[in-house]
Length: 459
Image 1: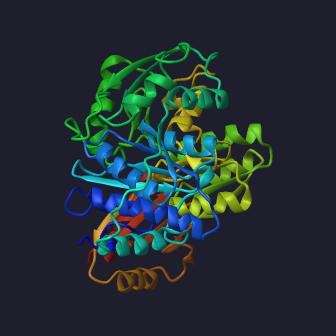
Image 2 (image 1 turned 180 degrees about the vertical axis):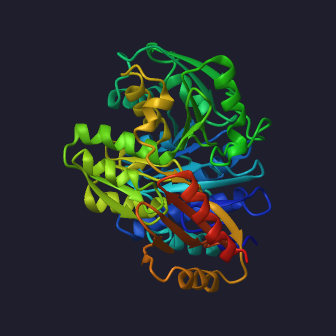
């Protein structure tokens, strides 16, 4: 019998198919999800379900639906979808949801992202532990396999999703842009033609050049994980060779978007966070913006300059979404290219962030490298992982080496070490790793500080 503690983690379900995650497990989770919602005061009549392009997705989603039906609830199946399209469905239909995806994980994985009505997240502190415990009990009960009455409604919400996003950002008046999009054989190949192209809505002033739009969960070209620089190489080369104005890269379930400029150089997610924050503050003056603690120091600076209130959060979507709900924030951004919007049910959507970038960039004449420089004020190392035997001991060594630094412990330890220079050390929750992020006013200072810390961590 499957040990669900191995696949149901802090934020979602994720495991190798079929060894860890199979249709029996999906069915049990479907029943457990409905039961958890009822125990917490929700009375779900229906659950909306979507899946990405992975080969195992339709079978796992159908098994989950049987579990939902056996618990007495119906299913709205939207079929192929990006994760943010599932959030749209949950928000617009006011239903709990289940998205079958393993995001950027390799082909042998699949998983589930669960949400309550209005796309509110389900994590370990908001019901996922109960789901895991109840599903484990169901798997152990040989008599728990009886199916209920099948209640499954098929819905196609792709056009509705595209219309909603276009209602939030008007791209019709921008200058013509040549945009190369690398979907990595993931769900961007399904949603980009609908939202940015002319597949279901009138054409925009965008020439979309597709890279790897064929839906293929085996990822034959490269992993659908743009956070890893090697997976951006094809896009960077194509932008330079074809003289494009901008490049966009989506991850497997298309809820994250990365940007490269006309030279093929990445525009940091911190710069995108600051750019979108400025636009949202123009719509909602004085609003609150959430950013995690390892985004650039430029982010809170630009938020304040635009009349907003920056609120610093721990890393992770559950923390960002909780802060957004508590403060009614208009927008939130992370270093990992997750972007959250109040007018998208506080959920994350890479597509909407990309549209904001295109709208801002396309409304002025500068090339993207010059335009984005306004938001890139510091030099950052990016996240550097080091394998260590004792993370807390290493952090103590680093602290001793910087006795004059100002230190806070919101998430790991963040050291302020002079004007505009800081670094953060965080231990991984799942691996024997220390994660280092460094920022300084110039590349030389950043590199020196990075190397000084790494010498201690790896010494």
